[in-house]
Image (cartoon, rainbow, N blue to C red):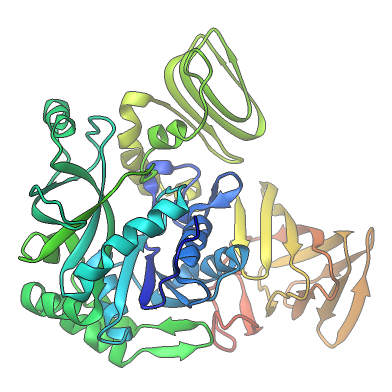
Length: 480
């Protein structure tokens, strides 16, 4: 069936989540919405594609942390959509994010605010459901969407509605995550729905509701927008004004107090992908309820999930386990404890382990690198540079670097000289030498970099020129 596209809707995708329950795959530098999690796609890419089916070629807004702006760009490019990033200097939850979206919109625009990290595979049904909320939103109601519950889930919030034949049903209250017995009663009732966390509301109605129920959040957002700057496809909110904003969800700040909230039921498959149990449920099971992604092998095991994209992982005689393997950390957790993974991450952060927040394999606007070995006074990286991309012009005060090209062509700047290297050729960058690595070719450039020196931290860099506007001239203490 052909689905009508809706031009009056302005999508605003909320990309600020940290996803610590999905550690070690999701980390601070690469939260779950940016990770290729389902069928090789990130959840943000899938969200871009789903929303594009609703609004066609309209520019989609992404509300994201400033540090993730290049990850948003890559997801939008993969989804082949037009986008604008509204960048937050710090996270301040959904009320502040939706406030700045409303302040950047036309007063009569319908804002569709939705999470970047949910799994909604039925795009046509999603579009039909959003259409059912348009009339109520145009009349000034705050429209939320509830998922018809299929099980007594204790990890979701619920919405209670009044019985109505209208497409949008009046909301009587929002309910926190219930215990199992209460959740059973909710599923048995026809008046309770899972809170999907996406909303449709006129921009001026949202502003008025914030003025009434959270005026301090609105005021801080107004100052942040008034002083914002635009650079290409990015809008940078004023850092000082936005940082002063109170952090609170739109549910607590507005919806629990609002007198005109309605809900449109969603009948399709939905998951917030909020735990490893939720991720496991998205993978097909064998007769013993085992689920495997990648190179996992099961022997005499039941109800075991293995995610092993890089190497063989074997589970022997296990039961009710989740096993997640990455290049630098492994998680083994009982299914009943999956919600506690976020607490473990806090402990790892307190212990100052880099694996708590960073991946060995790091994304950069010019490409990516993988730290494949390191020890006393040396580090080895495999660096991949996109066609036409380049690293900054920079120098290091404490380390030298050896570069060996293994694929593609590299243009090297080393002090005053510039030259090309091809496969199996190498060069040496002494300590204190200005240098730059570029890929002038049409295929990815791959090099092996061997660092040696007294200090090999990522903050030993002085940058003189950068194509991505990440730092000002000569600023120290940044990343490559």
